[in-house]
Length: 232
Picture 1: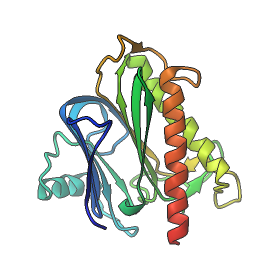
Picture 2: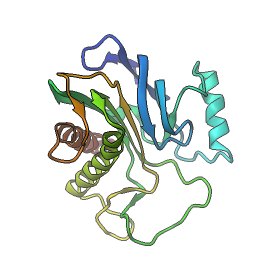
Picture 3: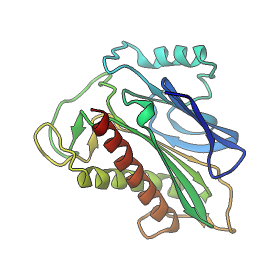
Picture 4: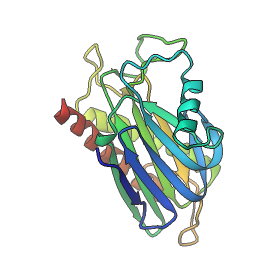
């Protein structure tokens, strides 16, 4: 695919870059991040976030160290760049932006559902590193969030993902309606810029933040999964 570079929210400080090997979000100011990334995951303030494409047969014994080496080779600082891995194609990534005067969000999603699963049922257990097929969600929020709202946003993203998969009739290997895949990951990144003097303390379904998060994630997942189906 031809590399794509675009601004988010029509701002000059947030850039999204997409090419075959990866997508990256770059900010001129630090973003407040909560992430499940295996490389650089957890809570922190970062300027660059990466979602990296790997081959579907990727079987590195130490994917963390291998990814750190990949980051260095591609001009990123592994100490400052939380990174997700996926076998999903970057060309099928979906970017959905929504919002209002109180908050703007961008849901950036890559998805492969060949290892779809329904949470709460018994299945395979990985003691080490599972296969890289996954739904990766990078959610960018232009607004100010409390710590509680940052965590609450993870819940809303997950519920929206499950809703989208049910609408698409994605099923696990036993024919059950899927709620995700076995290796899903999420990054929430907030500019922490206060809009209209409003601080978001909640991200549930009836909150201003939750409304746009749920809708953007649901639409982005539907779009990228449908693109993958068309490709196949």
